[in-house]
Structures are given as C-alpha cells and as structure tokens.
Image (cartoon, rainbow, N blue to C red):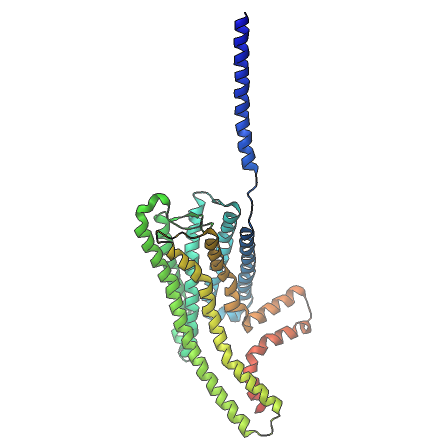
Length: 382
C-alpha cells in the first residue's frame, strides 16, 4: 500500500510538471507575438515621407483631372491626352503601390498575400513604364510645336497622340506580362514593397532575370531620358535664338528712343536677362526631376544583379521613395504652374468658396504676369 501511494504521488508530480511546461510554452510564444516591433527613426522618416508623397500626389493629380473636366480649352489641346495618361498612371501608382510599400516598411514583412502581391508588382511595372513614356511623349510634342510650329497641326493630331498612347500601353504590358508569367513579381525585403524580384529558390533563372531587368530599364528609363534630352535641348536652342532676336529689337528700340526714363530702361534690361534664364530653368527642371527621381532606383536595380553586391534595406526603400516622388512633382512640372491650369483652378476655388470676383482678381493677375512681362517692356516703349 505504501508503494502504491508513492508511485501515484510520483506520477502526479510528473503530470503536474508536464502540464505546467505545456502551458508555459504557448504563453511565452503569445507574449513574443504580442510585443510590438520597435520602430527606428529612419523607418519613421520613411513612413512619413511615403504618406506625404501619397497625399501630395493624390491631391495634385486629381486637381489636374478636375481642370480637364472643367475646361473645354484644355481638352481641345493634343498634349492633354499625354497629360491625362500620365495623371491616371500617377493616381493608380499612388493608390495601389504606395500603401503596400508603407505597410511593408511598417511591418517589416510581406504586407499582402501570395496572390495579391504579384498583382501589385504587375501594376508597378506597368504604371512606371507608362508614366515614363508619357513624359517622353510630352517632350516630343514640345519639340514639334517649337521647332516646326507651322506644321504642328499636321504632325501632331489626336489620332497620332492616341497611337502614341497605345504604343505606351503595349510597351508597358509586354514587360509586366512577362514578369507575371515568369513569376518574378513578389515581396522584396530590400525595397519593402511588392516589386519585380528573383526568388532565392529560382537562381537558375538568374541570366534570364538579369536580361529582363536590363532590357526593361534600358527601354524605359534610358530611352525616355535620351528622348527628353534630345527634345528639350532642341527646344532650348530655338528659345535662345528667339531671345537673341528679341534682345536685338529691344536694344535698338532703347537706342532710338532717347526720352525713355532710366527706370524703364533698367526694367527692360532686367526682363531681357530673365527671359534668357527662364527657358534654361524650365528645361533643367524637366530633365533634372526625371534624373533625380528615377536614376537612384534604376542604378540600384542594375547594380544588385551582381552576385557580390548587397543593397542595404534603408537605401533600397529611400530609392523607392524617390521614384514615388516623381508622381507628386509631375503635376507641378507639366500642368499646375502654367497659366491655363492656374486660371481654371482660380475659377474653381472662386466657385467653391463663393467669393466675389474682385477677391481673386489679384491671383488671376499674378498668374498671367509671368507670360506678359516678356512683351510688356517693348509694348510700353513703343
């Protein structure tokens, strides 16, 4: 009887100890999962920049679309087709890809499932290439309008613009569909986003993946940069020749008219200097924003193809954010800083706020000041 009691007591203690261990393991695991992930200062700044870029991009691109819906004059221009294509690409990239990247930075893990992440990667490849080709189309439109002004209506028609947009879509779809069929789209820890990447288990496709990546960036970024430089440098050359002609006329007028006050002469010379610098600044903005926003990301994607190169995560996310920043700068570069768009926006604000016409007359006058100062000096003299 004594032996039986001892045996039962030993098995009871053993059972209690095993029961305690089994309950202690899930509690420890749950505690580990319940602990929030520490957020570093760089991650917080990256998340803040993504949110700021997304908000600005969404507001500005929607403003461009709103201007088109409210102005028949803007809809009648052929370049409006390229601007609409660019704005739609920027809006979709803002709505689809930027939230996924934000969640990837915040979680430090794949933000979407195995089915949704390749679809988001497909959208990124298509929308990015389409946006770049739209910028190249806008530069070619400006080149034709400035270099061949008398033949612009025959060289750039609505049918021609629609064909260029159709080519842009087919070009972008060819690469995005190839990426989807080869299963090269998914979550990349380096960029904290759903993008084109090569799985560690499919290293046998490294040569094909490297060829695809190099061809994609050469036919999108490099080709568009070449078109931008060619078109805008030709435009700059014509603009400088026109400025020289205006300068000669202004100088001869100042020489012939002796009774001009000195203040008018100084203002004419100042406007003459500003006129020479204005075209250079605009073209520098067109080309500079393209290089600044896209080149870090493109160079990083090409360099990471080398087996010995490891891209730091913070640098990869920063390069990604710079490419996203182009969506928020495009409306200002191509639309909102121009007089026609500002005039439409002022009219919309006047209608929304129900202000009197004279309340915003100062804003409309200031919006047209930059386009009339070139001729006001000569007009005042004559």
